[in-house]
Each structure stands twice: as C-alpha cells, then as structure tokens.
Image (cartoon, rainbow over all chains, first blue to last red; front, side, top):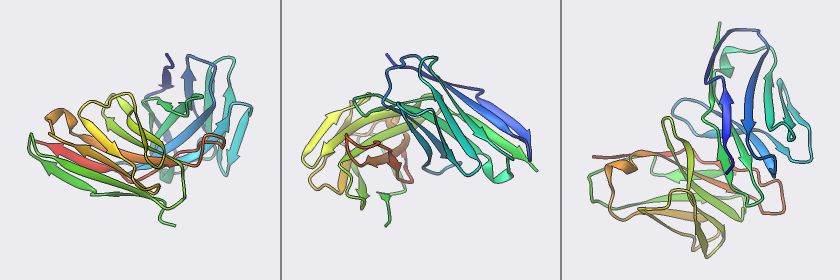
Length: 111
Length: 114
C-alpha cells in the first residue's frame, strides 16, 4: 500500500532564504507526482506535476525533482517571500489515476 | 473559464438531515473526484467518476452517494448526516487517463454537522 510522508511538518524561515521541502513514498511504481499549495481556508492550487519518466519540473522560483528509485521528491523554493507562506502538499498518482496524499508541510516565511 | 466550482461554500446541518453538494467544471474533463480533508488525516478520496454516467468508490465511501448525470457535474449526497461527516469537502477534475492526469481543485465546501 502506497504511503506518502512529508518532512518537516512545519517550517519557519526568514524572507530570502532558499528552502527544500521533502516528500517520500513507499512504492516506486508511480504514474506521476504532484505538488500543491493550500492557503488557509482555501482550495488547492497545483504547482508542479512530474511524470514518472521525468526527473524534474520548474516553474518560476519553484523546482521539483523526482527520484523514483529512492522514493523521494523535493520541492525547492528559491528566494522565499512572505507570499509563499502556505501549506505545501505532495500527492503521488498510481496507474489507477488516484492520488495518495501526504499531510503537508506548513511553511511560514517571515519578513 | 471558471475551472472547478463548488456550491455551497458553507453549510451547517443537524444530525440526520440530508444535503447535496454540487461540483461543476467547464474544462471538459473526463475524471471527477470528491475528497474530504480532516486535520491530521490528509485528503481522502470519497468517490470518483471516470466519465458521464459512471461512478466508483474511493477510500471512504460509506455514508455518501454520488451521481454524474452530466459530464460537467458531479454531485455528492449525504442521505443522513452524522457529526463524523463534519469536514471540508473538495471536488477535483482531470482530463483523461491517457494524459498527465493533473488534478484541478475547487475552493471547497465547509460542512458542519451538529
């Protein structure tokens, strides 16, 4: 059974710092991996999707990597800003197209 | 495009009452999903649909029913609400099984059952 873990559960950093959020999964037979952002009381916004055949995806200051063999993905945020404060969720998609979710990392970027 | 919309945004029910949550998408997506999000539990799949007229059970389907009469709409019903169904409900959609299957989410419905 696929399990997804995100570490750390919470992170507080000063503005401008580069940071890495981690996501690990137990079954390497994945279809894709998706990173989402959730603001308090809001819905989920898709940030990046990595297909199983890809190693990384980039969007602006965000870079997500995927290492299937080790069961790990990282989300790199460059030059963090207070507006980046949110919960970041990792979800792994299997060949049944269902997503298995981590519990998220709550990020606070302090001015 | 409005993307994925959900109605209502908030609702308070008494135990035993029934209600229907509506999800609509204007992206011509084949797949639609209903999730619930609870503190410490993460998102859990309730039911999903792979196309108009089809539905399937997810991880936590008990106490819920769904219908997909039109491709753009996916309804989630609670026949007899229980306090354990207090949660935030999210609807999502994705294009197809052969594509990236990137899921797009609605803003959520906050349901409280007293």
